[in-house]
Length: 359
Image 1 (tube, helix red, strand yellow):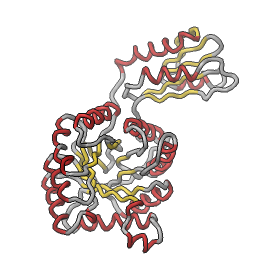
Image 2 (image 1 turned 120 degrees about the vertical axis):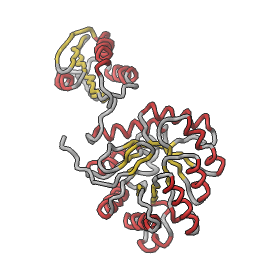
Image 3 (image 1 turned 180 degrees about the vertical axis):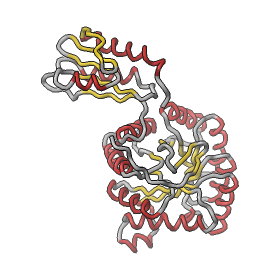
Image 4 (image 1 turned 45 degrees about the vertical axis):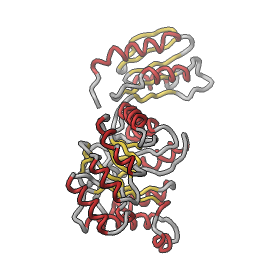
């Protein structure tokens, strides 16, 4: 795969996670618990950490939620971004509580002095601000100007917020421009990227459930990443945030930008298949779900493509009638009965675990 030439953007930090200027594209998600429920929120963040999430965003709907952010932060490892709308006091309190970033649009939190207070507090703590433009909440005058929530309208909305921050000499900025329409989102990011070097948080918003949301996110985020646009990503699904993280890593893997966890190559099955591939794949996936190291595994079910695919994987099987071949690093290591194929494959993988390196 040809190496993607990423757009060079400014470097900021969210906690200890470097963003922009060639840093690895970070995977982000958002909790779906009531932030005020500390126990449930911490539990979900720990699950996200286990899945590989590197930055987590929390909704801050009121002061009660803002005041417990510090307690949540004490119990987790990854950086927290406070998601705040309209109320500058919530942003000030979130900063006091030690959050690592803010998602707040300076143009919608009121008078200029309120914005100055937030920016001053963020500067003191070296906390970046993400400007998050959404096509569903653009200012009315921009809708009137462009006739609809176009990509140009989204970029102009972002420019207004950026101008407010830049006038206060604040430049630790990250930007997102999201719509539920894939092509509109892609157009907005392309336009913004051609004009600015601020790092970009990329995603398609309100994509819906699985599989629809996975398809929309993969196409939109994937297109942008292949063009070198994007410094952090979030897959937004009407589903578990753990699923969001797993899909995000799959997108990064397929685009060649990051390699992590297992990649299963398996045949869709056809009339030539004489073994239960679906059951085998499910068993392999479950057994290896916690592996974080990059690993390619082939589970194939016929003599046409099976041996070739299994040979190219780190580990693989090519099954036939009542038996199959086990491959390790391109070499045939064993021929076993059908019912022993998966157990043998997993045994070989487990024997190699000690040599895995972290991603």
